Length: 355
Image 1: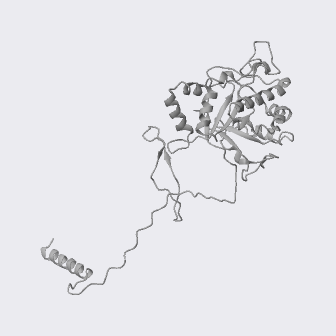
Image 2: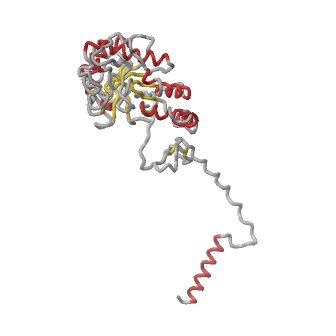
Image 3: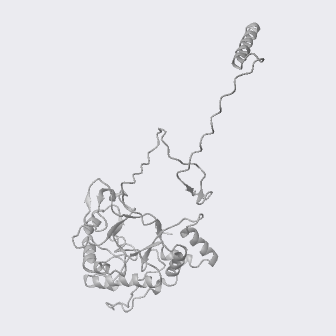
């Protein structure tokens, strides 16, 4: 570069700088304009806790500010309309299996208390689980197969004289009682995998159906379960009629068609529901999302629909959201209609296999 041209450029830049900074130092410059106040920090509209698979963060509250605003952006909108109500939420939780209760109950006292407080407590370091599903009798995730009224082969007990919760008094009941001391408002759902085998068409803990002659007896079996749990200060919030009624391959399990479930509810179990001493919800279907017509059949029956019934969906099969196509008035359950409108019915969804 030509040195003369470079010096001229430097002089020009220096002159411009002088003009911009006020030039004559003998004159007092005008006072600086009042500085803008600091911007108001964005409020945190959403609190967030993070758990990572590598356990580098475990239920760790995040300091990231998440706030709603009106600045146009490409993000999805979250619209809250307080004038429109959909189904209510009873709680969030898991299935507490017999095997889990067995393992939890064999932990040291301090370790067990710490674990249950972490899962069911409501403090800042707890998950705050608010709903538990337990099996009525054994599930396929219990250490052994049993019902609450097992009899020697060839014998029956239609008066339920031998009904007993004894198989669950060692582990499940004590764990539930401790959970309730931690969170007295937690809700508990009972789900049967199978009735006693002497009530079934095949006399086996796997598959088979409920003999019609034992419909009333089985209804009383479920009522006795509610009574004896309540006597141990364990209130039952809801009862499902049959876990996975179209899958008879687990041990234990039982098959139950929509027609059979409808008849059992309206002819036997429904009459127990009218007893004001035991306020619980009747849960129908309790299986996958691929057959929503099953709960529709049950809940549309003229005699059965006077009960407060709700469908429960598992996520092992189906599109995951069949209930978006149905609506039902609450609490009379007068009908379920196919449409694309809102869903003012309570729908339960089982997502986790359990604790």
